[in-house]
Length: 244
Image 1 (cartoon, rainbow, N blue to C red):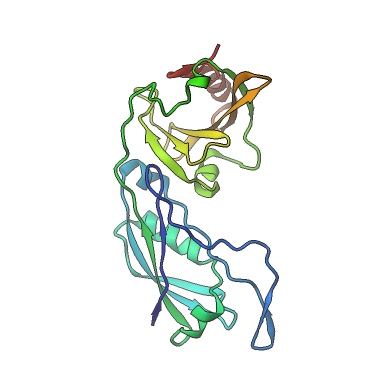
Image 2 (image 1 turned 90 degrees about the vertical axis):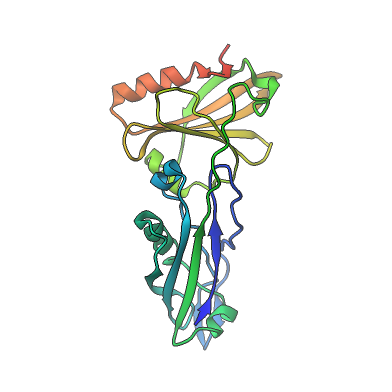
């Protein structure tokens, strides 16, 4: 049985590259129209992020004549049910390529999905990681479009974290990290009041007419009064970069 591997990491670790297919043209296989290959990256479960847990899930996967995944079954568990479910959910969307399909045994593949998390690096507040140009910026609140909830953001947004930052609010369960890249510099904050995040904030650091501005895209799924309070509080700025 062929083995086809993939890996994922999140928050302070490298995100292993995965071939992500877009709306590519279909290809012809065995006289029929088949979709282009697809590899959906698994979402790192929030509970595993909080606990700093990882593992490898080995899946037995059945594919059809076009390489579409029809069924998945956990052959070897990671030891964590949420990682196993995340692996099955992602691989269930796959369409394997022609070369991989040609190597199947009885229409089956073995696919290991690796969730690899290094311990989060604790950074002191005011770390130079936050650009000096935005120590006293103007914060502009805007909607985080295209998502229904903070949990959906965490599961589906394309994250490529560069480093983890210690929680800026003592006593509040939260995750703060910087995305890779500098155009624009971007940070993400997730606040928890229950197992799933209740607030998601994206901070984009830009210059507008020579003025340092942080565009704060905000999404909250708590009660309206609670969300209004959180929005007002967060608009004051992060502790190491207060608003003007």
